[in-house]
Length: 363
Image (cartoon, rainbow, N blue to C red; front, side, top):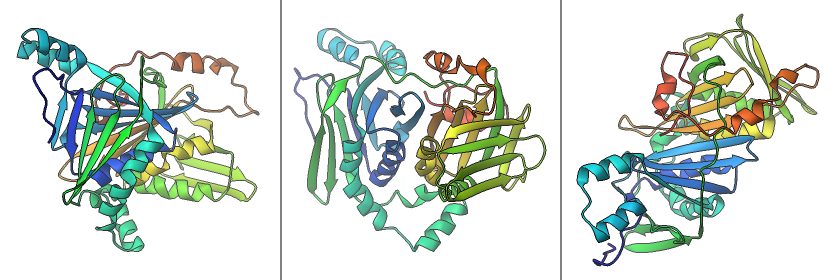
């Protein structure tokens, strides 16, 4: 246990968790996008954001409920507590809105968790067939990742300090110190046009996971995504040197829970960028797939981690345009997507039946 003298400022982040495998899987799922990440600390938990050339990005949220203890002390409160009294009501109001961000190597962070995360997971692993069956029956891979006796502690003291990750297993402590850099701004969101969502699909994750695995076999550079008013209502198509793969889905309630489409729509995406969402889809129990008129797609993965708890991983991807189609009217897509103003809302709202919930998924 780390102690602090009266002259010491409290760390910005001091958190403890026993769900090492869970954290490892979430970090690994978004690390496919970029080797670097921005971590945003707030009173609600940690938000990990990664992007690739502002063409694809992912946001994962580790809610404070998944930590056995979680303390966020904004630097402004640190200064106030040392020089003057800090009213608890004011502190609570400011902490709810205040955030603190820094950038860190995602590759190094994943490597820190990999040894202990894999050990926890292997202790509860079953045969491949049994694990796959349990995943497809609902509950996702996350259900098997919460066991183990390893305790993980996260600490960040503020600007210029390393991000400290400590693992305690049977009295043996391993400490990893990751170099950080100051982050003036968070990663600008790739935004969906809130008033122009033309497709919203809520489906079981295992069916989309199967489709992504099939699409890989075509070795294609692009993937075509279609939503139509007549069956089949949702189509994923890839064509490559090894052939073509087409996955079709109808409005079967056992597969697609919600389908909302104003018209028949077709968009083309970079296959490798789209496939960066595959690890998160493997963890999910349910997927919210939304596309606006510019072809910007959000693939939000709802991951069930047991005891009625969920977390969300949200992928955003910009389209590439079919060379055989006239799409000059869409040239303003990238400019619009750089707008960073967005309404804060909970990820669970995106799985409601309404079709107007198009803002960013995390607080």
